Length: 205
Image (cartoon, rainbow, N blue to C red; front, side):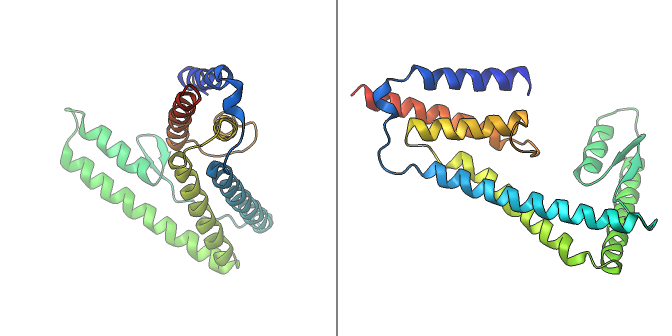
């Protein structure tokens, strides 16, 4: 975790600790617990499918047959997906580069990427892994959607705020889950801070 992210988490933890004890009592069921559980279940399903798929691929690789990877080499880097666009955009900012050449190179590499993606799909079909990969893909999309939904579920109790903060902290430092990090974690911390402010204000009324 970066220093800035760690300091944000630490400050929110301090906010939880400073709240009056009376605010910790549970009232109505806090919706954040269900949201956390949903993401955890979807994450577990996705990781299980990914492990199963990886093991199946390993079995095929033992036979000397490797799946084509949709990566191209541009500017000395092996890249794919949005990374190709990022390299193009960076090169277009260089006044010493020819924009026409960059665009031509970009189209060439995107074409190569599509060819490799088709080759990978053919490999999956040839080894009976197409449905398994599709299932893992959709499981990943469902997990990502659940993760991005978490910041929109505001905790209504200190216990809920602490649970969401602990869950995000586990994701950030990799203590409990192995999950690619994106902005939903930062947004969730902001949600926790806003929730604690409201809870604290209610306790003083």
